[in-house]
Amino acid sequence: MQTETNTKEKFFTKPIAIIFVTILIDLIGFGIMIPVLPYYVKLPEFQASPFEIGMLFAIYSLMQFIFSPILGGLSDKYGRRPVLFFSLLGTSAAALVTGLSTTLWMVFIGRMLDGVTGGNISTAQAYIADVTTKENRARGMGLVGAAFGLGFILGPVIGGLLSRFGTHVPFFFVSGLALTNAISLYFFLPESRKLNGNDNRESRPNRLAELFSAFQNSRFGIVVLLYFLTVVAFSIMTTSFAQYTMFRFNYDAQQNGYIFGFIGFLAIMLQGGLFSRLVKSFGESWLIVIGCFLLFASLFAVPYVGPAFGGLTALLVGVACFSVGNSLSSPALTSVASKEAEEESQGKALGTLQSAASLARAIGPAMTAFLLNDSITKNISDQTLFRTFWTASAIMLLTVIISIYFAVSHKQEVLI
Image (cartoon, rainbow, N blue to C red; front, side):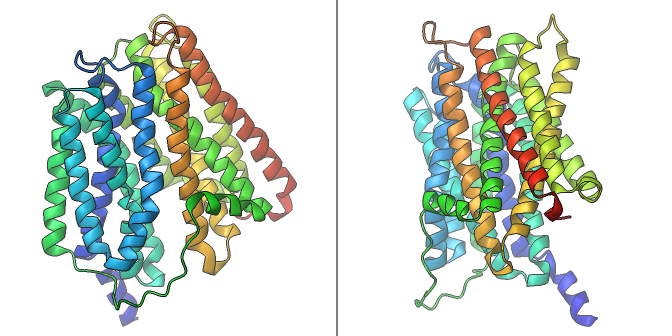
């Protein structure tokens, strides 16, 4: 009994708190970009087209996809602390470069550097695994999920509010925040990994090979495919949404920040309070179907919404469906993936799922870059809006079909 008490008392230690803040800052920085970046690069010195805006989002996620395992490998070899420290310095420098940019190519450099150093999430997760017992491991990873949720709420709202003082200000805020975190990490975070120069860990395959290997198990392969397609569709929405509201409603970064904060708030409320009860009532497989259907229907309907058709009320209903649909399908898919994996392969299974998500977050914005850009005017139009949202809707229709097949064909094996 004494041991359990001590474990509980020692869980949220200073190192765990610093790691939580590190992940939170990364996600706040990412969240700030969603409503602010499209407005920032529309300034006269940049005059970015929808194509270029989409590629700015895509290049960040592509760099993160490539460099996340590299940073993870460096942290295995040289320790978690130096990798986290230098990656935070990189995040600070990237935000500063973006905020001080005078040409579009400088913004691209800032986004690429941010993607490279933003791949430190896996290192932060490894640190948590190093310093927690098996009993507390789930609680530790739960903190990562909480940081993601808070970052997605706070980032857009902070970005929108700060943009009132100048479109450059949110980037300077992120830079200062990351630098402060790097300094606190340097002075207060101990190294978690014992380095003896004799690391005999098996080398992991590259991330693409890891994704393809998932399909050796048909059930797990379907889960990975569903997760990948869902994130592609959702990232198309997040990349195009601010441009859509700018075009239809003449909204600015602050108004979009509130809307994305609303999406994040609903996600936290659902995942924190209702999700476990819904799993008991319906099972993960049918929650995946319901979540995918909500995303399909809302992505199909939202491009019809404008000041003359539904207005803000219809828009909030649509984004609420975005949030609820994603908040049902994503954690349900993660839960099924975890249950499909052997006990000793949990890390590999969830790592494969995150690899699929990282690749999807690069592909979705890249697709948006082509879909939202009018080939003649190099701008957004009603036609490009509909084809962008309807492409995402079509992807979700495919996931609905696959998820129904998954639920029905394996209904005797539904894991509750």
